[in-house]
Image 1 (tube, each protein chain N blue to C red):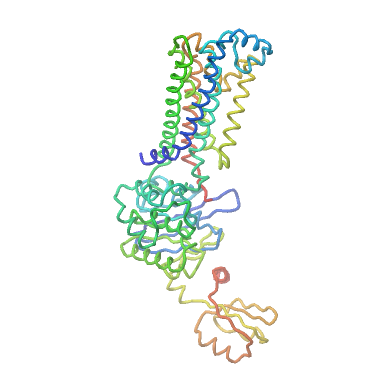
Image 2: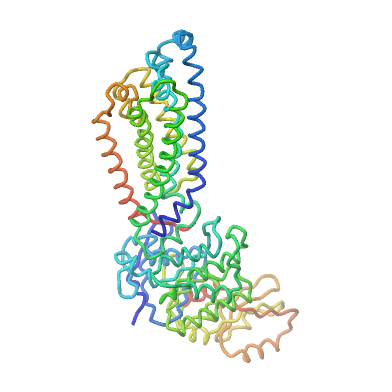
Length: 291
Length: 265
């Protein structure tokens, strides 16, 4: 069963920004990654799903119901964490969470305590006094306290330290095992790789790829950067793309058997060598070339 | 209900401050009244020295200024002015506050309709204004009784005092309409001060010029205290205009807000 379905969803603002003809489905129980660089349209898509903004054309359904017509009903089962969290400053954390819980017709006090404990959040502080990371934690607890069936996260990890990120990911995995569906937007590929089953890649408002993480990992790319006097034509091997030469620096992307390329490198006189995970932009370049 | 209580609590402090301010303003003016009645003739002579246009603009009527109701209705125009700023502030805040404080995402992703949000907030604002007015009127009655040597005509006194709320309600409606129609309001206070003072100045000119058209434009002239004192009632045509205006502005706000895109900050 599909929890989220997007059918040619389009939202235009004047001419410049927006999304056009986005279609994909998110299945029940799935952790679905939604990646793309800043300004690609991730937030626009998510805000349209939550009917914070309304589509120009096309439609979307959540739990099989139209997101515009049945917005209040759908939202009973959605937990949302915005990329930037701002809450009523003069409230205590506890009061804000109680206020949030009061919109759902169930008792959430036990879950609030559990979540605050896991996330190491002081409930008695004023929101005004919290650091950015701690505000983010309030956002996480706020998004999960009513045990939603669908969790929508818009770049949730910014501001969290690595330990908290780990705890948060564990929490999400737990929710997923309990049957929750998760839509996770991010511009950090490694984050999405760690957590998600499938990803949609979006750029400039268009969906460029829909892929299983396992497939992405199979054609896992490495970025090689060498300091050498060797010529670039020495690297005409299968799996090597995006060769760039600048002075005596040579860089390329490689996907394939790592031993093959290392053997090749060992034949060349190198001054220095870097092997890195390519950033998202480079992966995109790669996808564009394939098309 | 949770939203209504939350909003009411959010407005609590400003409501207390406004209430104390208008009560203090009224008490200050009314405390001048006993002194004024002692030298009534001299005071009238002093006022006669002013050109008629200035007197009209300030809302001073020589016949009634030394009577308690006459003096009260003169000072009352300042109370209405203050109350209107409060009302316009509240009305404009209803929909713009969440955007400005960036809490719109919080509220609008809850399982409620946008109409429910506007309703709860509007009720909270009206409640805050009612509280201010009830406390003000009670304080005004006590003060009037204290400073007057003769018996006070409380019927007319109340008729005048209640009009503050009527005028304020129009500003709430105007405020909510502006905040629904505008994409983002950076400073509520400067907007509401501008609108309220603008209309107040129009009202001053209308008195000076005696133009009837201007009277319909400025809410401050809808409830003419001289008319109320004379007839112990309001002018029906203005009540109808007010009701129509309020219903239209609020209905339009509901419609606009339900269709509005709420952008990320």
